[in-house]
View 1 (cartoon, rainbow, N blue to C red):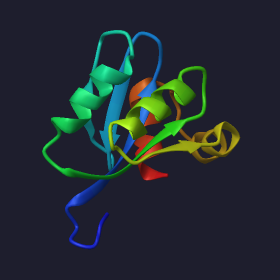
View 2: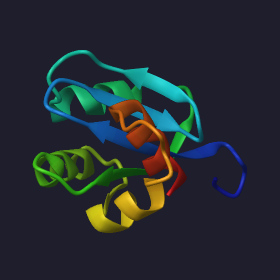
View 3: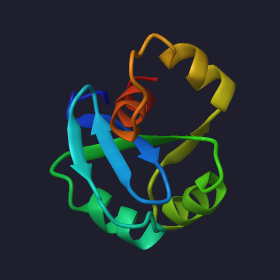
View 4: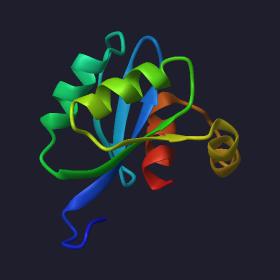
Length: 106
């Protein structure tokens, strides 16, 4: 969280079909459409809270998404896949929603 407690760290759980967006153990928004930077920027800008940073796990879409999110003025950062996998391995079931939550925590 930021200095005033109102800024949140968000995590994205990205797949070709959908993207889950999570902030501190709660799903904020989830899409059932193809993951596209323009849609993600729009959804993130519609959130009620201030965004401190957005984490996304390195993967097939991550460089493209990272570039477009940062071009839109959002503070997006990559998280190394092996480190994320190690940190989230205690999750009993892997889903985009749980990935997003874990990425927000990391």
